[in-house]
Amino acid sequence: MLSAKKKITKKEIKEDKLVTSYYKFYNFFMENQKRFLIGLGFIAVIVVAFILINNKKKNDNIAAANLLSKVVPLYESGSMKEAIEGVKTQNIIGLKQIVDQYGSSEQGETAKIYLANAYSVLGELDKALEYYEDYSGSNEILKATALAGKAGILQSKKEFEKASDIFMDAAHVSKTNPSNAEYVLKAGICLLEAGKKEEAKQIFESIKKDYKNITPYLELDKYITQTEL
Image (cartoon, rainbow, N blue to C red; front, side, top):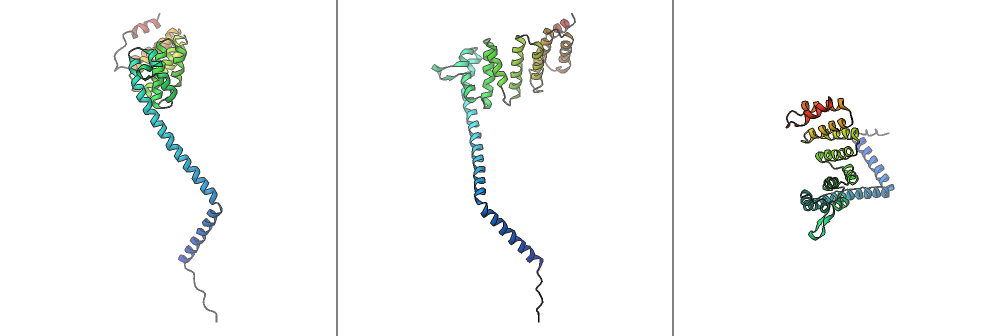
């Protein structure tokens, strides 16, 4: 007499599927073990590289900050050539060398602005323009300074309309920059110099409307009068 078949429970079915899945994965892993290990090794290399790069950036930033603190007093005293080249007898590294070595760090980016300003004061406008354009730091005030520096050089080269546009760009980098009104004023002056009197007047009038809480520019009305001649 045939015995009754044992009924397989849902739990046993689940367990059987789990065992089957386990062995499928195990066999797949064993067949592709080399690839898995290579992949894990590659990921480990990326992680280590990321850590090393971050540490280098941090160390470069600290080094640039230390060097910058020593050379800035020369810059502030008006000794631009010494600030650019450094003073070996005083163990002061110049701004140019700081930029060359640490220009990709945040403090190295700051050094670019000092270097560009120094070249501008010395009348070496092409070199100044190069470093203003090269600035790519995250500081919004310095970003605006770089744009305004570039605009000032273009203004001196009589590229007035282009300079005006860049002065306006500088004014819109940050809403809290205390130099914004000055940049807008310079943008209007550039248009006035370009013979664009009506456009210049609109800019001058906008200063009265948009910058009510700052000290009024004493010569603003003088420029407005010039647009009406």
